[in-house]
Length: 317
Image (cartoon, rainbow, N blue to C red; front, side, top):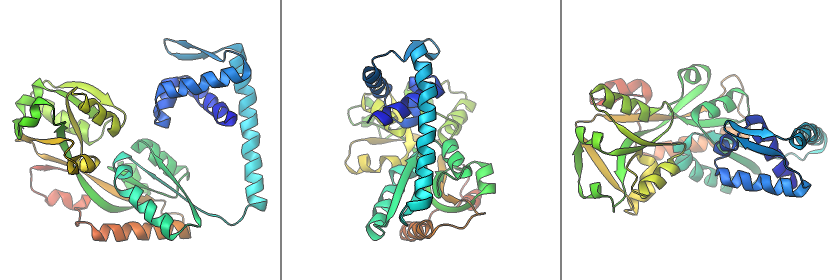
């Protein structure tokens, strides 16, 4: 739709980068560029040009940005006016999560919830931890499931432990390492590593390895777990992800887990998180109850405050 392309253009202009906008939307830069070209074709003008630092708007682009921003603001105001005065009583539930819970826990929970509550309109968002926490702070979502929430999040929001997951090394069956059941820590120095970007659990694992004198070859840092899997599939190196992210591939024998002798386990905890200063809506309360039922059917996880009691070979995060 034309309106969608206009909103996309405003977003790109705000970030001054096609690539940054694409990462935020979890789509490819080529997809964003194609939709922008369609918008330029709609109006028959060139809206921007690429530079070494991102994009630069043309004169037509600056006019488009000013007018489009005004139009989108007016549409938003109109929508709020109509909803507050004439909208039917539609229950809504907005849920967000970081990548690991989004891949495993929440899709099945949302599917079950929608089956039992078809009258509720559910919105499900996935992003990086800092973005999900910002959504919570700004009230853009009713609740979230976060893996390894920040200390400020743990202090400010209501947090309820949900699950524990462990980092694993993996390759695809056609990789030479797939023939080995175990490698040593020092062998990791000779192997390209494919990891998630950011300062999370994986980064702490890499720092531990470096502290032991290893000069690591981090060949690729990816924005999403899907990107890590794709790079490993192309034999670019050995991947590092949480076990839950690989359950389907393990079950179908599409990957091979590689044990690293002498390396402690690295675990991370997932939490149900929501604003403790506000009452949950009926739909959100029902959904939290469903998550608690799911948790009770799972193998009892180790909560964060008890992880210090786990044997010394486990790193707590």
